[in-house]
Amino acid sequence: MKRLVLPVSLLVLSNTFMNTAWYGHLKFKSAPLWAVIFASWGIAFFEYCLQVPANRMGSEFLSVTQLKVIQELLSIGTFAVFALFVYKEKPTVNHAVSFAFLVLAAYFAAKK
Image (cartoon, rainbow, N blue to C red; front, side, top):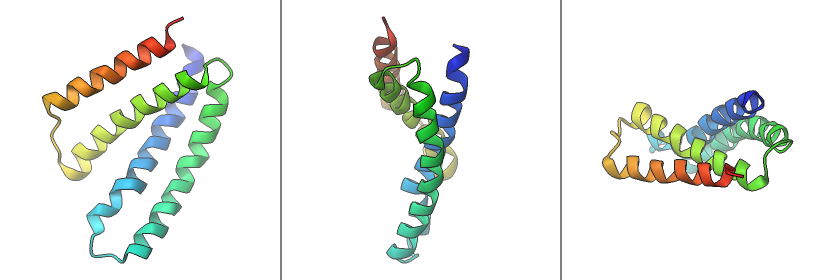
């Protein structure tokens, strides 16, 4: 469990950058497309600087499938927080159900 802290922390930060790169530009619809593409690529660079070492560290004790399921779980979790704070989107019951299924997926992928 202790070994998971650093890779998971890096993945949380990585996903925060990813959500900002993928969806943050929607706040700036009047900006030229080329400008938001370059800005998104610049933000994504930092995502990769965190994601690559996280997966390297995690692969020492997790399978690639386990890493991917954890990544997706963190991705949707950080996106929910991002959508709430940046776009003021309130979670719905459907969001909660889909998140619960992802938690189950993470559990079954990690189960020996």
